[in-house]
Length: 312
Image (tube, rainbow, N blue to C red; front, side, top):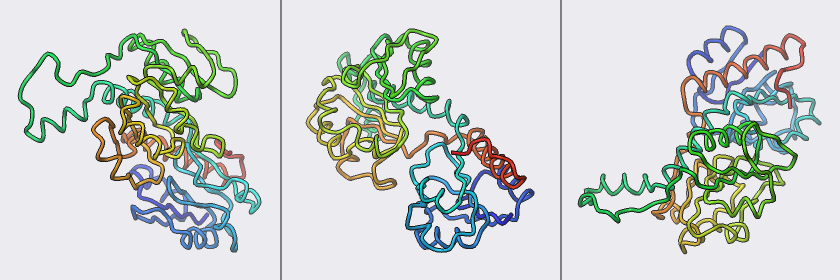
């Protein structure tokens, strides 16, 4: 099976892929262009794409030889599922492997934003710190606070578990379907969740979640509250968030994802009350290995005439 791997993966995963398939490795940091996506679909039996490799409807307009897109990552909003299915292309992803790492980044951003860690680090690096003071850089004490989680899938549940058991936080959440947890947590409406001290976004990207958080939703948050996004950038109206932070309608935000990634607006970068990470959600060696091996299993199953374990 002739396979294109669109981005450099970990050495262990690439070695496995090279041993299993007739693999071509594209070691470029930039995502596939539309022309490259079309050429890949025409020239390869299988493609292992990842975030940013846009396989929209236009990519499937030409001849399609490929039969599977084994996506490296749980999110697949860069792939038009309907267009893929119409072209006879199976799409898979890598759920489960990313859960704990994504939840860890959410907690990292919660603490950094609430305790103004990024701002403090910049102060020290700039040589502007004048020493400890009783009222210097006062932030939000996280322990015992109310956390509202929007999206209670695997990652949302992992965040809730850490918040409850690790920090004694009161958990409320908004989810499209009913969800029972093994510890105290209240499923409620979006407006109530937005009223929490810390609001975390853990929903998948979809047409329904595009700009789920806009100016109206940010206006429902408390002035002392923090917004954390580890989902996808376009879940938040970035312009509305910049305005809310600039005018101190909310206290802060912690972001690992952006609306037009990798573009981060200068207006957002200039704000002191936002923590910005370069999409580090799953950036740990063992996690990226696990994601890659899950993609390998999907490819191997398809090659062997079986249903891939993570077919969408």
